[in-house]
Image (cartoon, rainbow, N blue to C red):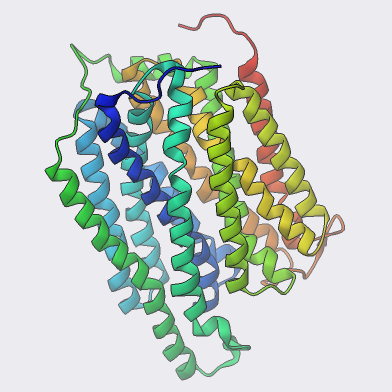
Length: 434
């Protein structure tokens, strides 16, 4: 049992402030996932086209994580946070002109820039939290901070459900695509304004938080002496198996998470559950996510991180297998249950990958773990393509005896199996790595 103190008294206020950022990107994740379904209905897109929402959202992480790490490495964590909040606010506020222009690509651009900001925040906050105490408690400390991420998820989903999905006229009207152009234009304009509003309000809130951060004096850890060369650092960290395989595992984890959260709406629609009601099931999933992460943080006092990761990944794979093979509400309940077992995966993989790196290597190493979030951009696109094999519907052809939407969850199943393999690999004793 590890009884070392998680956070010292002198680091308590910085810990609380940085931990509050975790809820911010949780909110952005949760309010964006239902937008795939919303844009699909409002703009009459197929599943593959609507998946560009996730491509834009998670592609921003991939594009900006490494520049963020290089800047934070050269300057300070506070500068990284400030730049992240500025980009976050700009991306959110771009939804205002996007709604006026009624262009899908403009909304995607706003999400892309918004996630530039999230890349800065995640690249900064995660290693900063790990460094606020003993290495022995780093994994527990990051899991504790990440436990506030589901708080943002729950708030984001509530906003999506009660202020967006429940108010979309295009989702309430049967045969929306058969309306004449003038009727559809009026409804489209109204619905895009509804989609716009949460992001604009969020942008204004971020600006207020930015002002607060600028006024508060934050302790900062800066390097002593000359920084090692970038190429030298890259060579050193990629030689470490825990790290290099951890980046791959993280990419598959994020892909699985976003697929399970995004396509819960399509899975529900296939069994005649409306989007607004599907949001209730996602809300329950996020509560389970919060419970799972809190429980996981406690269990890490007694169970090694790699072993707990293996158990949770195995359970997630079993739930996903039921989701694929069982049609109806049982499959939907199992899909909701997957989220409980996903809860510890991101911070645990992240911490296992970084725990053996020194402070400066961690800043660069963190960037590639954040870039691995690109899995959330690519894999939902592939899943959407599977669902669209027979056409824009959800059960127009059978694949190995399963409906398109059921079979599409083979992708997250593969991801969980690969995470199991990673946990087994890092549990093996290895020779000291340079």
